[in-house]
Length: 330
Figure (tube, helix red, strand yellow):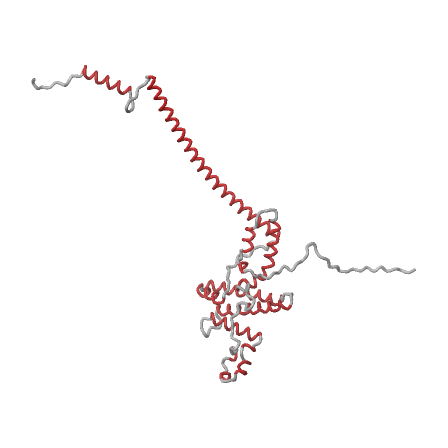
């Protein structure tokens, strides 16, 4: 009897998940996106219609896809800068920094000078030239070797040189050089720390440094919870509803004030018209009484009680008044 051995084959089958994965990283070319509140402002400008949630989702994917490129470029204003990446222009005929002190090259022929010029420099030597050029623009004096301004300039040259290298690699392959972008992130954080310290110690030196190096410095926000697309959309919708509610309440308040003022004006006009009509009716009634002989027209206001009392007083005075006696003889 032959025993049949049942072999159980297990395999790892890779299938597409519930949602497809997309390479959401996008290149940013719009300078307006350097504003940290750009996407929040765009979310507040979206129309509140039946496509509002879908529009928020598209805006969220654009926000997430742009964050890495913005983090690498926005701080140095490198958006739309595809040629030099903020690096200083160096003449190709210039002698490289490490050979500038050689007196032999001063009288050397042009062919020899070209060998030691920037035009024939390697990538590493060209990086050194960029660093020296940026450092000279912010260093405090010729012997300055360890100031914060010098450190910031050195880190800035490193960031921009590596960003240019990432761009050159991206033209050859679509795969991102994560080994290099990760280092750029670390250097950016180190420079941000140095900028914060310089800003706390010397505000004028800080302003001079970011102006000379063309750094776009934003005060970092407090760390917040990383929101998902649903949470971000709900937060934006809640904020939009609150803003719309406040806006409509303000409009209703202004409308109510206008209605109150209009009602007051109409009420005053109606009251004035009724008073004029009442005065006209009273005048007509008096004319009728004068015509019928029930009253007579007098100049001024007629006071019968006052007249009768005065008349009675005068009569009694004439009848019963006696002047006080006097001692004079008549």
